[in-house]
Image (cartoon, rainbow, N blue to C red; front, top):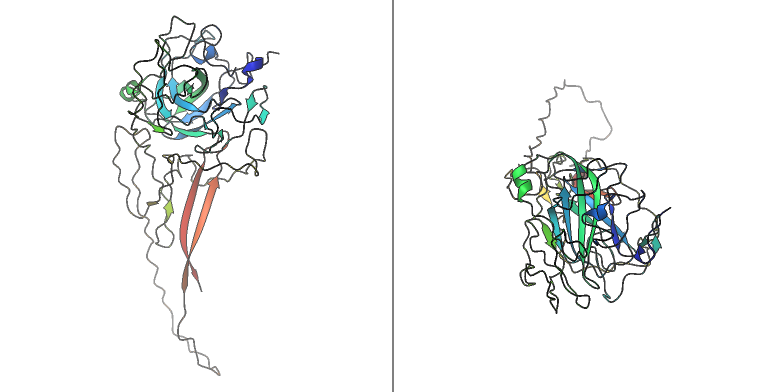
Length: 412
């Protein structure tokens, strides 16, 4: 049995979506790309037993395992349709089109950048792991992200890739790839062609791949991608190296020129009003494709996860673009899609009208004699608001979202 190489059990891998050679010999290693041993792209690995299904126009969870976070860095997420055929090697000219870029804060932010997070355990293949945030903004833990899958992608088998340029230590490029199947895409070739290719650098020992470096090991670098695309987030300000070696990537923009990304346009939900009153929800409520989500039990603490006595420090990083934004659903929602939207246009919402009550005809009936004819002067109806919240906790393979529905109820 081939185990992970000794000193390389740290570093990081993408564990969700399930990457090539996860649990399949030869096991996926945690090392950075290198022409002699772990070539571009994807470590030249392509073994799998099943594909992760990705629904175009929604989001997918991306999570990580690793004991050496190198103070985070910058990441890109991409799609390729140039997979190996019949077990052959990856073609080094395979195109990986960037669908999302994160500047800084990926896959972690740490308080002490001079050391990695404490190793809390190992996965089934002896890869080190540290505690996990369970969100995209925690500090001193491994983050996870909900990455939008563009609605214009072509359907069918594809490869989803994560590339990472670390902030501290030797300047390296990490890349893991996962076999996926795209569903529900429109296949707009013009928009697919407009996506930029991923950034490649810090890749030694391979003359077939054009290369440069992002800095030296002594410098802290938050990479500012030369062509990040239209969609992404800036979680930390870019940082240039103090010393730029002769083979520095001169096309990297200045740190002061951080990109401005377009917002992630999410479809608005349609929740029927209760008794003619307005109900509220979040723009994320339909992203998982279920109108009535079933709550998922919170897992018990395991190695590499957060425990109750180790709280996560709140981050000052700007909120996710998936921040819950209440929308009114008693009026039609503007259906004005733009070509720059990474997610599908909003469908119109039709008002729900309560049908008129049917008139009842009552025959007169003689009232019986009673000792008292006193009656209450009036009936008081008190209105109260009830908030019903359904929450699905993001976990491996699941999308996290919450629906908050306010209703008015009469208390007699």
